[in-house]
Length: 242
Image: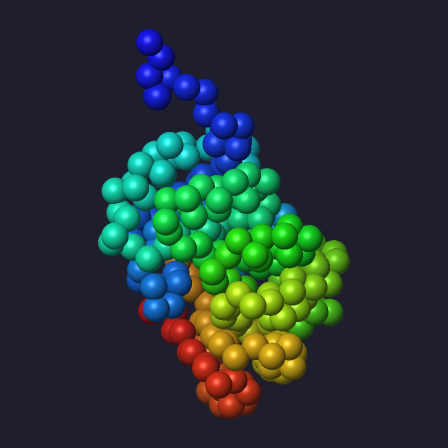
């Protein structure tokens, strides 16, 4: 007799590239206790990225979906949901199936994204309970951060889709003066407010995991920038590097 464990896994479970898993987080979904699934792959190469090991999808996935799901099942009743992060999780075409499976387990679903794939994100929005949207800089200056031409238009198309959806969301900007000028950061905040965003976080650069050692210098958030951005939003969070 063939056991359940001997049955072939669905194709998406064989292809999904899980690069990391955090079984319990209090910070990745504000106000929620969540597990975090980190998916491999990202088309951008942001200098301050603190998960550079997740940028590529070379070789087999380090973590099998079966192992992730087993841990999620054990934690039902202790966590509120699951956040898919990365990398850029929408780079993985198995993401919609993984979201559907998590929902079948009775867990809410959140997503961290920079909006690199607006068409994919638009299709995912009806499946999500929350989105943490990572802004990089002023739309016209995106290439200076991501290293990829045209990334600004794609990111801000995604930002508009999230802001005008009925999905709860938070927009956040990681500030580093060497990559994002105070004027560009203020422009990001103003554009977000114009889109109707109510929850906005300004985050200090964190050197942990960053491969560019020179970025660890002069990364403080200017007080005057915080003072200009904070009044634009009903709910503003300032997140330090510590």
